[in-house]
Amino acid sequence: MLGEKADLLFVNLALKAKDSEIIQQIRQVLEGMTALVALGQSENKELMELMQGTKVSSTDKIVTVNIEYPLAKAMGRLNEVTKHVHNALNGGDGHAHRSKSKSKKSTTAEKPTQAEAPDSKE
Image (cartoon, rainbow, N blue to C red; front, side, top):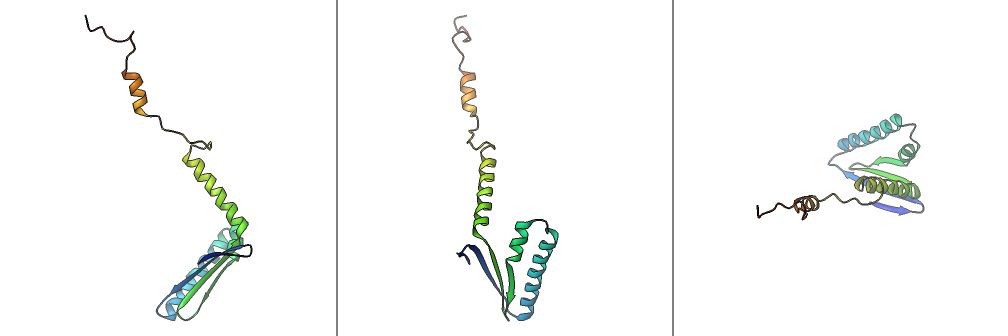
């Protein structure tokens, strides 16, 4: 589930398994991944904030992952990504570029002017 509460964006995931042993293994993997990311990216403040807002819990047959992150920061990152994608698609200057049509070039190149036209009477 994805939603908003107060000033936070939240994601709640639930993973269901047939027995508690598998649930424990899944929980340990998720907790390990969270710890590994936090350890390897400790200088990245935004990522650390995301990791601190991530909670993994379980019951006998369900592992739950709850993630909370400030909505304003999430929207700011989304805007940055959107601008980056837009610039990448439009050549980096924010304006749409049209590919030069071969037909335009060939039309101009293939149509000789009066001065260049071969004299068919010769």
